[in-house]
Image (cartoon, rainbow, N blue to C red; front, side, top):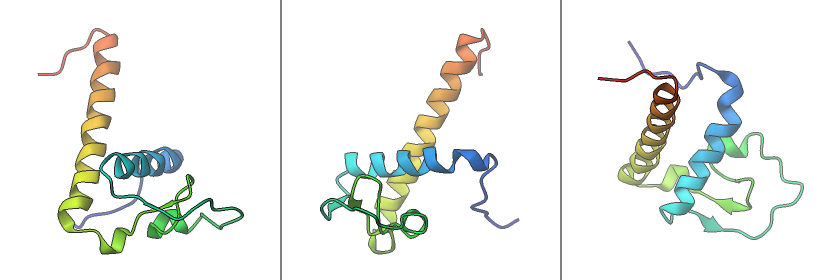
Length: 94
C-alpha cells in the first residue's frame, strides 16, 4: 500500500502546518524573509515557501535528515498529546 498525504481529519491541516513551522523554527531551519503582507499562503504552506510568521522554510532544499527531524518531532508531540488525553480519561497504554 502506498503512502498518502491525505489528512484523516482535514480540519487539522492548519494546526499541523502551524506545528510544522514551529518545529522548523525550533530546529533552526527557518529563514527570515521579513514581514509578508498580502501574500497568498494557501499554496505557500503546501510548497513550504511562506509561513504565517513571515519566515521561509526551503522544504525542497532540506536534507532528508532535517525533514525527517521535523516529521519525527510532530509525531512525538502528537503521541504525547494523545497519551495525555487518554491518561486524563483513566486509560493506560501498554
